Length: 275
Image (cartoon, rainbow, N blue to C red; front, side, top):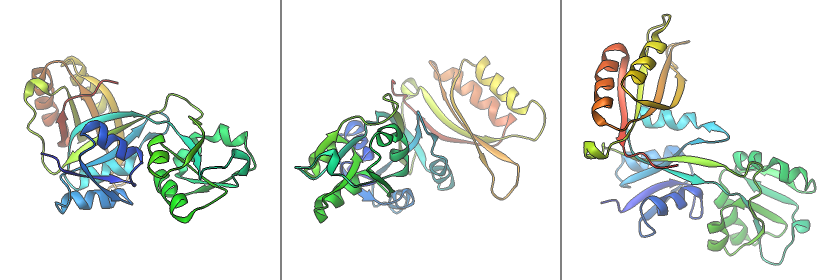
């Protein structure tokens, strides 16, 4: 049973929201400033599971997190998609005209570019975490400073939302994965998605051949991401996500790919989440 889960950021962050959606609001969260600390807490058995953002519908893959999961031999045991709504918030009694600076994660600032173009009087300052800024505004009673964060963060830190859903592209989703030290023993009948890693020979058609295996075995390729091998220039590892209706089809493909690919590795077998 999962009792404690590591998240990047503080309460009110999007990782915190995912912990409540995937588990429940009774699970204890361990707040970590970095994803490295998230992984360390899991490896050292300080927590029972970890939540890590892996890709965003606008910004794409968070490649360092793929490497963290792979390098530490962790397992993806579940996933959760979250609609990311960015809100401008500050101490009560202020208006947008009173805000001189906004601190937030670089990605959040980038995703709200159009809003701030319309409000050029606000200085944009990069910071490490969205909800952490909201917490700091409350703790230090910072007037004239705003955060970009979730509605939950505004509620937790008693801030007023000055503008809702300020992201330029309104449909903005992030995929989070639930990570554990061991692979969950999902019943085969419930497994409908897998995350895999493999390497291929540097020869013509090697990637096309393995993709054909996936297609022939009725697998749906939902993600492919290449990652350079640091120790071997110009050699890449591939991370792929596949979904399937029948575990037998996946097992057949897996057995073939193990023969065709180098260093074939299963990062996780789990139940896919509906978008």
